[in-house]
Length: 329
Length: 246
Image 1: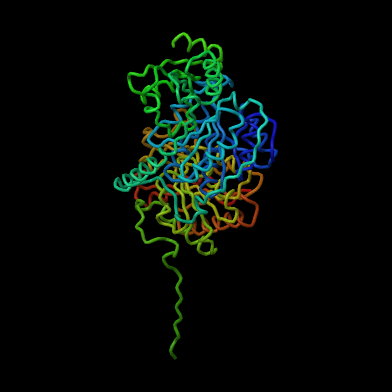
Image 2: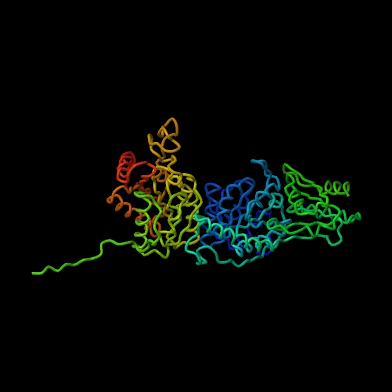
């Protein structure tokens, strides 16, 4: 396909197409409708009648051994959580594209990162990847699909609605060989999550715990100008995009600021060692301190954390972030 | 003159049923229908291609009893999962086996499959209550029947009127097959077997989605001995027409 000029939604659509996704079932509510429209042009979109049906259809496709994905935005993710849990128990991949928009409730279609705790919650959360630029979408989409299939777990591509709507010229040339899974793999006669015998359930849970220990080692983190940094900004998604621009300006004014950006939100990189030498960590996010609380739990109590959070669909402003950090350094 | 006696095997344990002892209550229709489904699949020679998706409820572990590929689905999701599997495995014989409550708990999946005319077969065992819950009211529980959640008997003013699931599905279909049968007598079971076979044929070679509703007995939750439970089902069916729906 080469370079395409388009919105994040179209770049995701092209990436899915190149990944050989068989069918995508969904309900084209905005803002996900733009992605569905792209997939319809490619002939791989099929209508569902409810979010729960979409989730069940996607689970069925994965059980049948075909690559698929479900696309959700905002609170739509809650209608898919049951299927995500069953995919974890069946030990099959299940790809999810989730768009972060303002919540709670309908809120508005503008960007927000309020689903971090929901996506990371529970004993066995799905793998969660988060791009910080439009250019990163294809490669991270491929990584998300690959990791889900390698470990036979659900995997979420979590993108805020700012990047989903941002336009860019992006080279989409990806290919991730499809793994064998579901009935096509042929190693199981049936898939169940019913373990009425406590010993059998305990055995299954223990096996998942072991698998998730291996998944933990797959955490990805981008370190930007962190080598000699005295201060770090921790952010993901579009917030990390803004944070890097702010760090550039702060470096030019002589402040030793770097950026630590988790690429995978689940598993989450181990940052305690990296951050020990720092004087202060600034967490920039679009949520009610979900990331800040999580970072707090990872760090030595001596390292001070300052939270810069925006709400309601407002992006973190580069100059505001710079002024906030300068004031507290 | 000595009469030559020829014998041939007229009945046997269906080869597709495993040796595992079924957990169903005495007189329950699930045991009868697991045998019927196993016989139809084996008779058509589709055991390698068949995938059963079992709804949440008493029959969710049917994969333990019928020796074909199987899935124990989340509540209300069996139809959606079956449609997804069929999309991925076009040559498979994919069927749902679920109770009335499970099917009704997400009718959007049934309507979606009807809308797209997905090539799947839905077998709905309608025992007029939520068996797995110990006899709670289901959307199909007839008026007047007492359940654990309608202890004074279902009433129009209290819990509303029962849904006629086959008529609902037939109304949504533009193509495919829809029928209501029963399992209260050997003759009725024979007809049900023909309906299931017809629905499988329509899925594999004919017009698409099939829906077969089968009235079933749940003696434990009806608080009746098995034979009286069967008579009760016959009585309920006086208000619900059986046969193929046009």
